Length: 152
Picture (cartoon, rainbow, N blue to C red):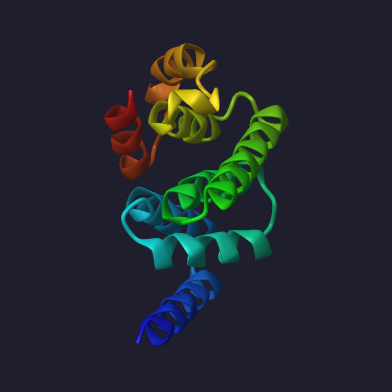
């Protein structure tokens, strides 16, 4: 049953992905990002989808975010750490490619705020929060603006 649901989710995601406009695609990714911590199959499907998509900084950051969130769903402590570190690497790559992107900085902030302190991924929280506060007025997506205000 789980396999059928996972396949169905993947197919729906692929169909939506191929028929959507770039802005709609990001809105769907944002919606799924908010749900990923509570939905293991959705998180896995988004990792697969974003791994196969173009590598814009925003999509790289979301891929990293989903991989970091996947650590919550993994059972093995080594897998958890590996997934988190992989996600962190993608997020930092996205920030290095586009450090002035509010959405990229939001993803980094959301992961840093929610990661355990023993992982040592907390050093950009204040800088990202200040950057987002200074640039939130430039955001046109209502959904993204709500996500930003929820995190900051």
